[in-house]
Image (tube, rainbow, N blue to C red; front, side, top):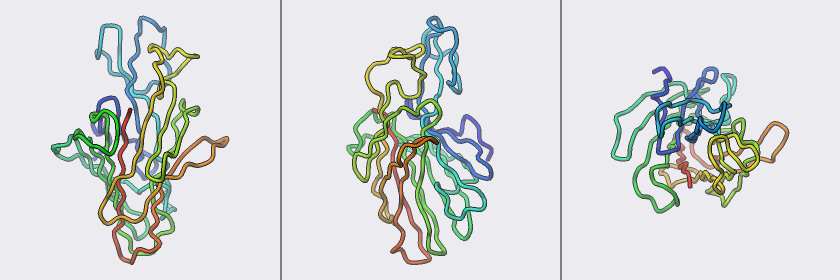
Length: 247
C-alpha cells in the first residue's frame, strides 16, 4: 500500500507518520502545534497544516520531533527494523492500527503501530496521547544488531534527552516541536516544559532490551532501543514493544 497522510496513527496531539526512505519506510514522531495567524506573519518548518481547526484565524500543524534512523539495502542489521510494506488494518478497541513488514538478508521483520486509548498505569500522561509500537523479527542466523533508533528532527536540537532508567527515555524541551523566539513560541505562548516519554513495555518472546542515549555531537543527538539477542537460539523470533506518550 502507498503511504498517505491517512496512514498515520494519531492519538490526541501525538502522531506517528510514515515517509519513504530509499527501499524502506521510515517513521516520524510528530506533535500537533496550533498557530494563531492573527499574531504572526508567517510560520516556518511546521509541516502539514490543518486549516479550519480551532478558532477562526488558527490552524494546526504537525511538527516532527523524532525520525527513525534507517539503514540501506546493503545492511542486513540496520539501526532500525526493516519496513518495506504498510497495511492499514480495521480499528481495534484501542484505536487505529497499521502493520508493516520487510526483510533484509535472511531475516524478516514485522511491526504494528497502534493508538492505545486504554487506561494504563505504566505511563503517566493523557491516555489519548499514547501510541504503541510492537516489533518482531524472525532470525535465521545470529544477529549482529537488533533494535530501534531515533534522531531528533530538525528544529529540536536543543531538546534534552534523559535516560530515566534502562526502560524509559524522557525528551524535554521548551515548546517541543515549535519554533521559539526566546520565551515566545510562534503563535503560542511557552507554558512550562513539554515532555515526550518512550517506555519499553513487557512483551512475550522478547530478549533483554534497554534504551541507550548517544553522546551529543556535531551531527545531532540520538538514542536507541538495544535488544540483546546473543543468547537466543536460532531459528527464533525476537520481539520488543514500546510506547510513546506526551505528558
